[in-house]
Length: 407
Image (cartoon, rainbow, N blue to C red; front, top):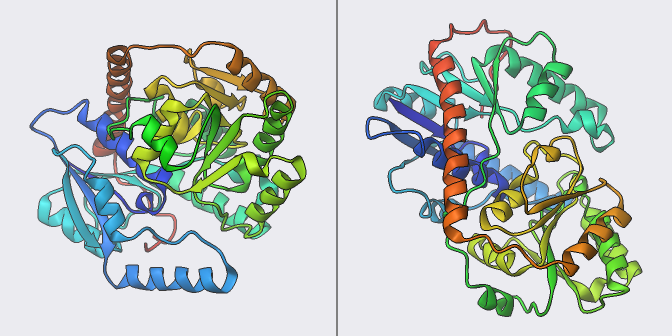
């Protein structure tokens, strides 16, 4: 069997590439030498050039970022992947994708965020992240809500199989789009010890000027990540522990609201914690993991996620690091001894959990136990992916109900 893993869309942001890593490692946990895995990277071609140019113009005119990562950055990240994976740099667009599949006899493609055309003969599996526009409609225009609804409804009827990151999203698909025809497969929580070797903790702290006890928020500065609740909770905690630091990593901008980060910085000033924040932006993954191993706990205040806890909690659980996570329905799927919950949007509840973290010794989970647990989780996730693959390969082609979106 030859499996094509599509980098389309996922290589455009850090969390997306982390999802690709998880997908690839989970597949590898379940395959033998008779299975080939091809990672298809759309890093060249006229469509990509036009897309990059348009993004740069929007960034300059409207100060809306972030920009598409460079091809060099994506390929450098691929150096960390398992050597059994076959990397293929192709042009952006469905025609080059179809050509590659034909030349290399690809049997199945995943995960696609849009409908693939009939010219791609291989069966395909779609991916849906979350239904944020349903939970937080005030963050979307009426036009965006209609567009997202139409897109999700379409995908859930034309894709043979759809993978999602949680049982919650699978259940919500049935709630929001009843009567859909796609087979939905919920991937189990699959935290593992990161394949990337973390930077040495002391060196990472020294590199970024971090001293003493600190908490971490590792999210893009997007509105729904709710940094404001984390800032307010941290300010409460600082009244009794003025020596603390809050370290934030992630792209410091939101394409939907260019002023969002500025407002957060003003909030930090008004709370009197501006000098206790370390906003590092996007840093090397190894450095981020190194800081995680040294922090008191990860704070995850998010108001919407497709997978339990989001990517940073995957890493924290894999490393045996404590996390304080908002009590969203999807996050409550987490059943890990290093995870505790607070009431979403409630800074007092979060501050109380952070305070309790500081009074309790950190758990010491042996590395071999973390590795064994991670392998077991990834194997279970690989089993779910192959459930979707076998269903897609055995399913009849769907009736086309709309136009294919060219990407």
